[in-house]
Length: 219
Image (cartoon, rainbow, N blue to C red; front, side, top):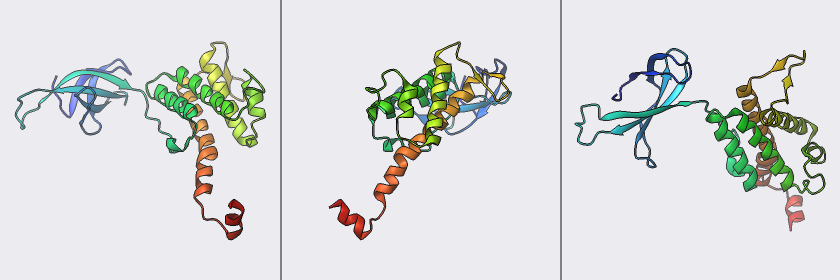
């Protein structure tokens, strides 16, 4: 099958044989030396990434790309915080891994790694030695604001839900909830908010002009 503005495939999201339409521009990947293009399913709106191989010797006025394979794009979640502001490499690596897991549809894994990022944050603060293997107690003694504690406790709950089949989450009426994609996204949103407060705020303060008194105190 050659590249065109619309193609017919079996949708990996809704399992229908249907038409996909273009959703972006063709880009060349230097890693696999193929051309990648995103399409949207006209039946369910699911997005896929299609790989095309350029036909050697094809004329410029013809369609020179042939389909190799395609895969679903589960989500495109991006952090609001500049990841380079997260100074601890272990914390940053876990956050990036959690994002990648979510965007590839591995929602339970994303929640577990998000919880791991919190654990790394507590280790950075030296709280692991005081309360080994007790993340709740580490959060309680972290010194962060009560609101941020509550955010991270929710991330901890999401991580427990992702790791343990018998750990369930409920709404205020006691109804059991099981939307792991939503849980995963909330977990990342909460972490992103925490990192913004913890690292971005510090960066903003550090870059602000100083008063004469503050300047003298730094000397």
